[in-house]
Length: 172
Length: 418
Image 1 (cartoon, each protein chain N blue to C red):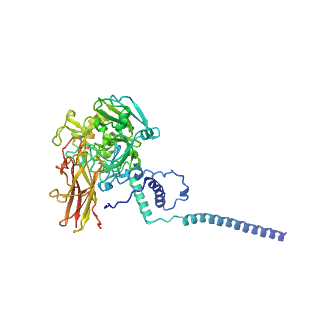
Image 2: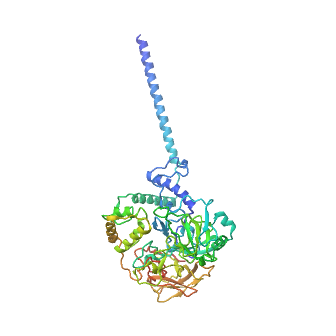
Image 3: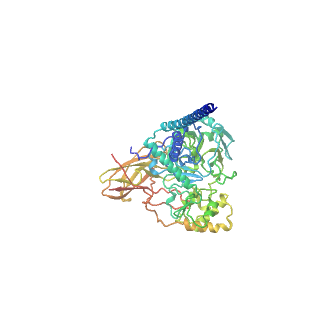
C-alpha cells in the first residue's frame, strides 16, 4: 500500500512538472511571436532622407501652429491668437458681430478713424445684410477706434525696413 | 534670366500625395513610433487634427501667396514670385467678392446671353462654346483696381493690396464679340454685365456677390474673351473655373468669374458693385480725405501704366563692385510700353532698361537692366514705365480717392551694398 502510494505521488509530481513545462513553452512561444512582430516592424521601418526629415519637422511645426491657432482662449502679447485681433474688453463682441460674415483679417489690415469705422458699419448694413448692432455699436466702435486707428504717413511711406528679410544675393 | 532662389512648387497632385505621406510620417515622429500597417490605410483617409494643413486650404494655389483675407478669399503674389514671363496658375492672385461656388459640373455648365439689348436669349454649353466659335489664345494682364491700396493716406477701406494683385497669364477661349453677335446685339446696346455662380458673403441667395461689366465698345474688342483655360490648363477654381470673362486693361473686377450669364444692357449696367464707391473714383480730383458724393463718382475704365521689379527680391545684399541685374514687367491699357527706366538715387537720375517687344495689347512686357552702385550703403531701386501715349508713373502716391484705386506709384525695392 505504501509503495503504491509513493508511485502515485511520483506520477503526480511528474505530471505537474510536465504541465509547468508546457505552460512555459506556451509563454515562450507567445513572447516569441509578439517579439517577432515588433522586430519586423522595427526592421521594416523606412529610412527617411534629410529633406524628408526637414519637411516632416516643417509639417509638425504647422500642426503645432494650428493647434495654437485653434485655441479660442489663447492670448499672446495682447493678441488673440485665433483671430489675430487685439485683446480687449469688447473683443468677443467684435468677433461675434464681424467674423460671421468676413475674416478678422479684413479688420486687422484696415485703419480708420471712429467716423471711418462707423461709415464701414453703415455701408455693411445698407448693402451687405449686417444687422442693427443696437447699443453694442458704441462698444464696437470704441474697440476699433482704439486699436485700428490710422497713423500719419505723409505722401508716401518709407519702405518698411523692419519687414524686409535681408539676404546675401549670390551673383555669378 | 536670373531667378529668385525659391523652392519650386510641386504640382498639386504631387503635393497631395506628399501631404498624405508627411502626415503619416509626422504622426509617426510625434508619437515616437511608426504607424504599423500605414500602407494599408484606405486612400482618402485623413487623420483628424492634421487634415486642415494650410497647404490644403486654397485649392490650386501656392502657399507662398500672401493671404489678405480668407472669407472672402483674397491673396496676392509677392513681387519676386512674379518673375515668370507668364504667371503660373498657382501663383496668380485671387480677388473674390463672395463665396466660391461648390458643386461645379463643367459638363452641364451653361452660359446664357440675354438683356434689353439682346435680340433673343440664348444659352450655350461649355462644349458648344468650344466647338461653335473660333478659339483664341492671348497673354493678357489682369490687375485688381485696388492694387496698391495699402499706400493711400488717409487709408482707404478694403483689402490692403500692396503690389501683387496683378498677373499675366495666357488665356484661351472665344471672343465675347463672336458670341454676342451670334445672339444678336440691338443698336441701342450700351454696356454688358455679368452674373456668376459665386454666393454673396452673407449667404443671402437673393444677393449677388458682384455683377459688373464693361461698355459695349470694350466688349467688342478683339482681345475681350470668354475663357476656360489659363496657361493651357483648366481655370483654377479660385480664378473662376469653369468659365470667366477676361478684359485686359480694365480693372480685373470686370472679368467676371464662374460666368453663368451675360446681359446686354441699354444703359450702364447697375449690378452689385457698379454703384457707390465701388470701383469708382471722383470724376474730378479731390484733396486726400475728402468726402465725395455718389453723383460725383465715375466708373473706372482704363487701368494706368505700371511696372513691377520681380528680380531681385527686395532686401538683397551685394558686395561693392558687383553689378546687379534687375528685371521685371511693365503694362498699360494703351497699346504698348515704350520705355522702362530705373533709378538707384531716389529719382535723381534714371537709366533705360531693355524692354521686350509687345506681343499684343494688354500683355505685359518684360524689362531687364544692370545697375551699378557708386559706394557702399543703403539703396532703393525704383522702376517707372512709359507707354506709347506718353503716360508714366508717379513717384509719390497719385490721386487720392475714397476707395484707394489706381495707385501706379513706381515700385521700390531695397538693396544694401556692403
